[in-house]
Image 1 (cartoon, rainbow, N blue to C red):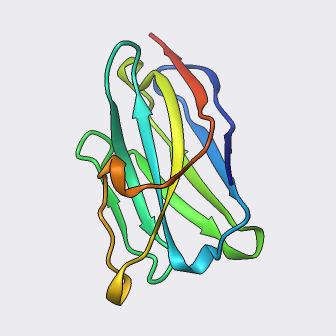
Image 2 (image 1 turned 90 degrees about the vertical axis):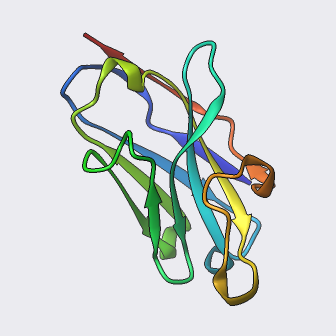
Length: 126
């Protein structure tokens, strides 16, 4: 199971940190992805972190602004969002994908993520 929380209403340029608490699966054998679904648009990948080697991929739209981190002891992954923009508004989901051979994983392929949290709403006002 995954549970995303920490969303809220913030002004453009401010920061917000989302958390994704996981349970029920071996945290160190999964990649955790963050996805963003803006109003009326498709869900797209924001970042994806391998719990195996800590490698992280970011969407171009958030590079330099968003950073992921994790706390293995708490089985929790964080998404630090800085310099927020109105276009960052939407529901943010975290999802888990079991790592393949050699720790491989698909960064933002939604179908490869089999466990999803309920999402948390972020609203960025201009």
